[in-house]
Length: 113
Length: 117
Image (cartoon, rainbow over all chains, first blue to last red):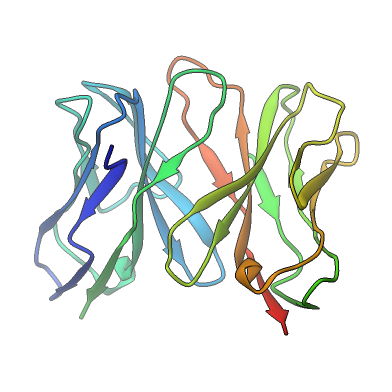
C-alpha cells in the first residue's frame, strides 16, 4: 500500500493564480481531511469528508474548495491564491472504526508571492 | 469549540534521560480521544500514542507513556530513555467522539524537543 500520497511536494504561486493540491489514499478509508500547518499554530483543519459526495468545513475553510467524487481522492482547490495561504498542507485519512487514528500524507509546501 | 494548549514551545533533554511534555485541553464533551503525534525534520506526521477518554488506565507504547487526568483536562507525554531519534516536533491532538458528519481533530501549537548527546 502507498498509504496517503500528495502531489506536488512543493509549489510556488503568484497572487491570484489558482491550483489544485492532489491527495489520494489506497486504504479504503471513508474519512479524509485537509490541514494547514503554520509556525506556532500547529495544524488547523480546512475541510473534511466523511465519504464520497459528502464534505464539510473545518476551522479555516475560507479561500479553499474541496470535492469528493471517489473514496480514494480528495483534492483541495485554491481559487485565487493569496500570500496568507503560504503554508504546508497535509492531507489525512482515517478508517470509520473506533481507532480514530489519522494517517497523514507527506505534505505540500506552498509559497504564494 | 475545543482548544488544545501546549505551553512549552521548546524543550531539551540529555540522551537516556526522561522528559515530560505537557498538554491541556478544553472541552465540554465526555467521550473523546487524545493523541500525541511526532513530526521529525522529514515533516511526516507519526502517531506516537492514543488515549480514549473512557479508559482510566494510562496508555503506554514502549518508551512512551501518558498521564491522563480527565478532571484536570491534562494529557502529558513522558518519554523515557530518550534517544537522538526522538528529536522532533510533538503535537497534542483532540477529537470528540465521531458522529455521522464529524471528523474534526484539533491540534496544539506543538513542542519542539531536542535530544542532546
